[in-house]
Image 1 (cartoon, one colour):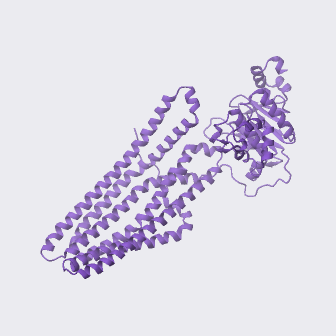
Image 2: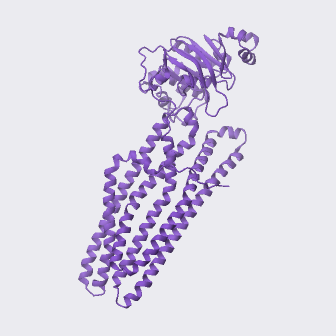
Image 3: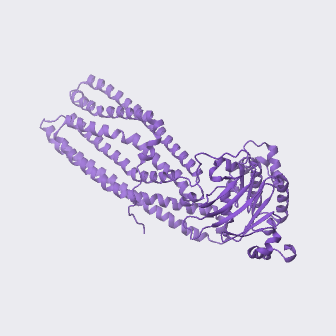
Length: 588
């Protein structure tokens, strides 16, 4: 059952757009002038037509008909010219503002930490950047091309209609208030429905995105029918609210037509007998009917804008919600400068918890890592390993304690400095749509092909890239779907090597590699980045047993730290992990 209860009132579209209107003020002013010119031409034509009927056609004055007909043609051409140019400029303003909003959203989302991303969700952010922006664009375009004309036509039409015949204007005194009441009632119905519609668009996008990204899991567990049911439910909810909105718009269309036709009948009923009695000219009655149509048409056009406003206002609120969300990770007001980057890493008494979580993910974690040495982190699932890596890379900020690089708290460093000197190969290596070279040059845009091949050789990826149809120019699908998991990981390793950071973070970055390939990669890395700080997170003991220091995390706390041999004697968790993976001879 769909509930259409009202929620908190979203901010107006104008409050969202006002700070961005500056570059378009000249265009908006030109549109106002053009719309005024269009309205004047439209208002002048009925009076000319009345004169042609009364003093030309009925009087048999061909010259009058031809002369005033030429004036009517000129007025029509002026109207068409003003309308066409106003529509073109209106489209430029609407599209420009839409582009500005998308850029603002992109810039804001680019600075979000994991917390903000988790709050909104990827599918909702996509909807806000596309569908919601389109709703705002549509309203701006409609206002500039329809609503601006309506006041000129309504006021001017009323004045000129009264000038033609005051008595017939009684129909207007009834028709316009009835139309306004209809507008008010229907718009009140549209606000809550529009809010629900945008929420259901989010749900449909989320389900579709999960279907696409999780297709292998869905097929592996034969959950196709379940996913079809989920999508059908979300799609049905969206359709139901859409039908509700369509029904409201249909009511308005029917009501507008009824009011307009009844008003025309009333004018004819009032004016017809007066023409017969000689109290009213035929041309004046025709002109009055035309002005009546213009006035009610202006009200209808304005109402069409008002019908779009609730949904656009909801969309503006959703856009503003993202733009008003300050990234959890901000730039320091006066960044600390590190003159000589060495790569000394210190994690000091760090505590961190995710919003809504019952317990912190990390509690009082401390460790240090030095250049030229390898520090490994191991622990059971959910022990906080990836969270710790994300804190070191400053994808998240600590709640308590500090992460320091070369003695400086990373919260006091410019974010660019952190990203330049801390290189992360994440747990799930992501490749962008483009060529192999394009993906590698995310590490260093200026890298030439020679450096690319060297990085690939270190990452043990040169052989399979050579075997690709176009080598470095081979196109990789979005997410790296056209290469295997192990190949993705090796390309991600090559990419971070090109960045040449002082600290390397490998978050389970060898998990998809077979043992022989992993040993080759780690041996090559040991030679290539021997003077850098290495932090390796792994599940396999074989990956980290040779590390200079191994830190064991358990339930978000450091249980023990030391070498492989030391931990076998001091850490029950480490001993249990070793026993589950290695024989006694292999562990020794």
